[in-house]
Image 1 (cartoon, rainbow, N blue to C red):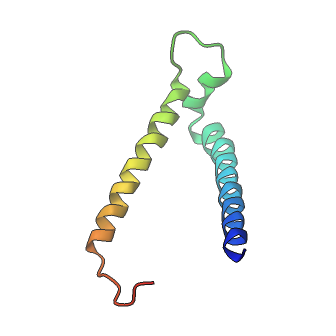
Image 2: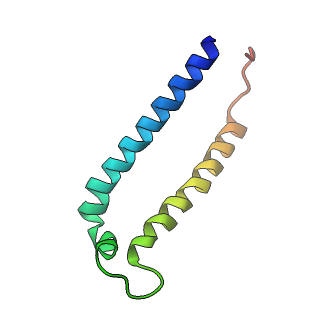
Amino acid sequence: MDRLAFDILLFVAAFTGMEAFAWFTHKYVMHGFLWVWHRSHHTPRTGMFELNDLFAVVFAAAHPSRLTQDDLTCRTLPRSENPS
């Protein structure tokens, strides 16, 4: 039962943290210094894509690069003598 409570707490914490980060990013980045890109989301679309779609490309590109960084870091760190 302790494991289930921990998993639920971890899920709620991750969800809350991600929502807070999304709110912060939208308010201070998209409506802040990157308004040039995001403005197209608030105007009628002309064409198949809008400049705001670049956010998806940038955020999607960040994920594999972070995974690669983690993979390279794990390969260079010494293994623990006491696995748990």
